Length: 612
Figure 1 (cartoon, rainbow, N blue to C red):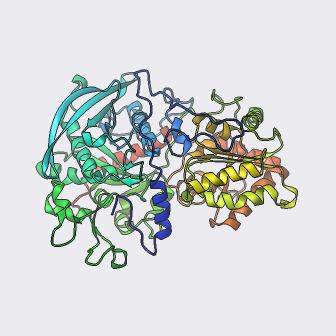
Figure 2: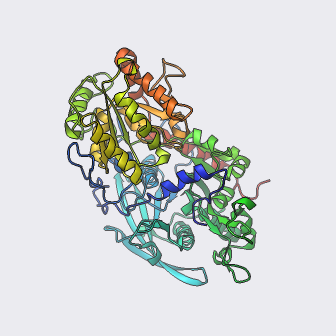
Figure 3: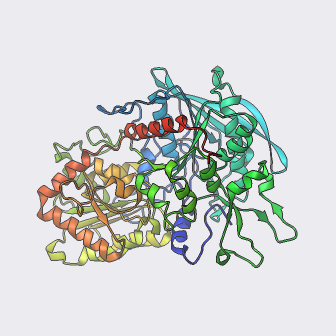
């Protein structure tokens, strides 16, 4: 078994989605950081109107994540913290397996980077810890420590980079170096055959152990140690052992009693599952015994698959589930939207951990991620013309420029629909593909002046669909196989509607960026999509988009038709929806207010573990 969930008859569809996502953990590193601030990722633009656009350089992800850290230098006018935090003197330690711009496979790197910046600007002494997958310019060697793990002593080297944000605020970035982190493929898997690294359990156990040493054991750049009263923010399964080690190795020995650990679930479809034992009886290798944990910790990590999901005769189904251990041992569980926090407590959305989550539901909450201030059409230098909710004339110029760039017929009156994201079933590409012919050829009561743009990397079958659609409806469809953050901004600024029929979406960033530019999202009513988009079907007076429910071809066609009809026949209704969408507040300061509230509650309580 690997770090993703094993398939069963009941969960086969969900597992196909999760594994499809896993196959696109590509790409390794963004540009090395400079002391001036995080640089933008390099972009690669395809040729005008060509369906066979370039493949990007391995960065396969939801595109809005690529430039999320741009514009962090200054908060937008009016963006203020409204919650009065009670523990600004308590340091925050963010522990993550990837961190923009040094390492990145998806949205986790962007969100972790946003945590580091925003908690520091808020006033906390802040540290972010990540593995060192390569040589990082500006990161200076600090010290070496050794840890006993998997039957041997393993030395890790610590490197430090200080990033100054002004006014005496900044973040300590700490990178942990070990040969196991430096691989030629992806961060978590071998890109040549899409197989998970066989030593991932060792790699991230070592990372979690080493990360716990930093606050109490290192003087960073000559500054005083952080000490034992800190708040750890651990992210996803790669750091799942951190709260387990914190409880069973540190608190058990008198350390970190004043510290707390918040565990953030970014995607429960990935849990870090490994066999309890390797090999066939009687010759077996005990994975748990290699972790350096007392026997009493086994219960927190152990998950047993039901009989019908076991893979061979004599298989006991016993696995080590790192996420289960983290959920059990952490002091509070957070996830990236309120809707997703509810979904993961259900059998359908909980990926077999719904009972564990439901039992701790009082200490579980969801906080919608933010988007940074660079996503603002009033100041965006990467689009053809600036505009705002008062004067939308610049959006027409953006549409014209987009059509010219991508080889579409230049027509200001056309309804432009777009999709940007991974080309996978989880993102609903099969549904979009099934509706393309209907969009282009069906009479639809005379509503036929429609153009469609689809951009992304992913599975070959969906890349073929993009090329087929552009070839068949040349001038009306653009199939962009690849990714460019600059083109993505132009697509969002110049489109009228943005499609996100994701089968599940813990948070989702593109729909929020689209609303900031007056591009109305059509989304599946799930997770963060439901939380961030107010549906026209629920209340026309507050609508900022449309919900697709249930998620199937006919339902999607109905929503598409309703949206198109409003665009052509009720321009005032459409304009009012644009204005409401552009006035939504999806800023990080708003999200950080909620994190501060949960930090205060967590510090006010005793450690969760062991409470009756």
